[in-house]
Image 1 (cartoon, helix red, strand yellow):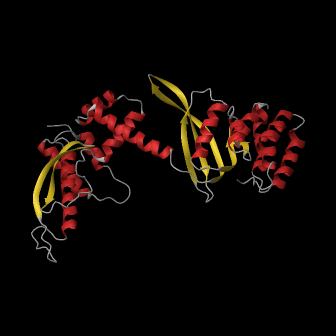
Image 2 (image 1 turned 30 degrees about the vertical axis):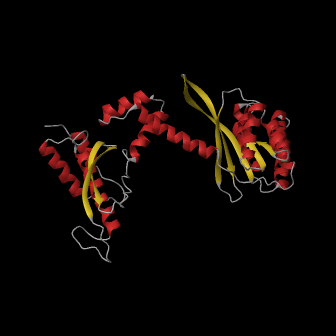
Image 3 (image 1 turned 135 degrees about the horizontal axis):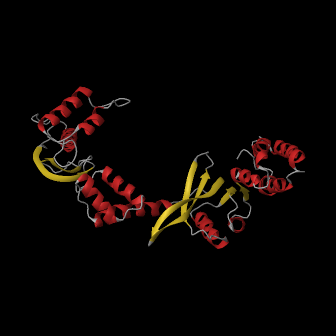
Length: 351
């Protein structure tokens, strides 16, 4: 008899929230599988059989809705479209390949939504392929993994088609039109592993905007090589402007080399301000560790002030308290925070 103990415990474990499955029914199905020596997973297993039954039942329900009457009932309103048997079709699911009987109608007008015509994979399989690809597996490794774990044969060309479809959507998203004005745009980066002949850490820069309605919008992603300068940023910002962003009121960044110069070229009136988090981190470079907490507490009223005047008053207080001991921190905040804010009287510190 097949050992199903661990799988059984997983299926019988309580599930939080509302469930469409009756616990008693699940327990009975598992007990029958154990008694009959049926595997829970893999080819011919219980999950595969359940997937087949659920898909076929859902397809029959779709056809009933399409025809407007149950099997064996007479069509109303003079309609003469009826059921017309089934056709066999194998679809790749997360439980492995499943052969299902797809119902047909006499008029040929039935278009299934759950498993569309010519669809050979359910959505979960594509997501699995993309997840494995994102983890750095090659197409051959993904194919071998799915065959070993799920008994599902997916060719490397099919995997390539799945990943390419995402790239096509990504390209469309990256080139979509943008709003004409953004109050604030943040530019930062994350380091990710990129496979390009060999696996290496590369920076991926992201521009996140706050729209006039107050919503966040990711404007785009750009892969760098770690040596980006003014020329690189000029290309990125020009791309953003060409997609419709005619003006940006404030751009927040972390002292990325060449970025302020590129901003002045593309949007001459835009305020460039260093991210407050990075300003705080940079401040600690000039202070003794024992003073870090005190400095952070003293600076908080400056960058959380509700008005320009209040921010200036709090900054004067900070300067009086810490300027003698740490003049470099005062200068850092003058250049990175106070001067950019004061360069436009309409710019709110709460932005």
